[in-house]
Length: 83
Image (cartoon, rainbow, N blue to C red; front, side):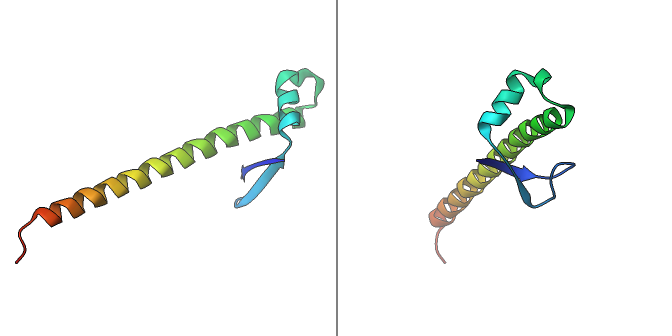
């Protein structure tokens, strides 16, 4: 079982949308064999996965920048003469 943060038509905010990776792959390979709701859900899950990765990566980058700025600030303060 895999999951993504769910919102929108197929999920409520703050909940997780669970799916089988194998089922998602089967629908992506041959979408003609499935009804429109299953295809819509597969598209929705794929979009959520992309969005979650982008949001997570943005969070990591911001957190790293904050850490770097803190270290620069500490280094600068350490170099200043003490009063």
